[in-house]
Length: 292
View: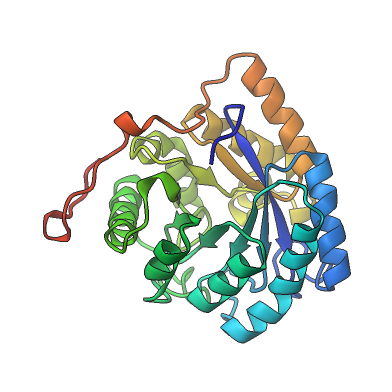
């Protein structure tokens, strides 16, 4: 997971009909492969391919339907030999295994291992990178009155517990990325507070991925429709970068990549991750606790 710059851009490829922004545009395999290659040409450092919408209110797809959607796309992109890592956006271990066999090398699990008890062991067996994201509940109910006394502290502790579970299953800490889960079981104010306090999540010592691209909390702040949220998304990315985020999951790859190039060039704080010596060390399961 080494990149020769202080950030990486993850391009979103939704092979679904119901994703909140581009649902249906790339549901066809050929269109999804073409879009993936276009994003790589635009500067994507990673491609994230998903076959099930995880937007609030969505119903989970079965592993079988996900596999049917994403595997042909992953195979098509992998055959092109771009050298850009391919990530599979899934909560199911069966989909993860099929995707890795098809040419992916990352698993992006928005449930942080909660939905499939076999996911952590599967990731350990495959030796791939994994994005462990924070969320609560299920996609169809997660936005029904989410509550936190301290959203930053609670997200940090729950992420630490999820990371501990993956580590206990045998996943190397070098292969773990954390994601605070903007928009997942969080109100508009929760998202704002989480973005402001993101440095606490970064202090866990793992590469920090954020997905704020065109999300509803940006629409709530700006009053803009999803098609008009690029400026707000870039502002949120700048705030995240300055607080330690290093991987940005986005729809608008070229514009985000240009934005981050300039931000990094003029001395934005940024974080390409931290060294192993600075990482939080996890102990035994019996000694597991919030360590941040």
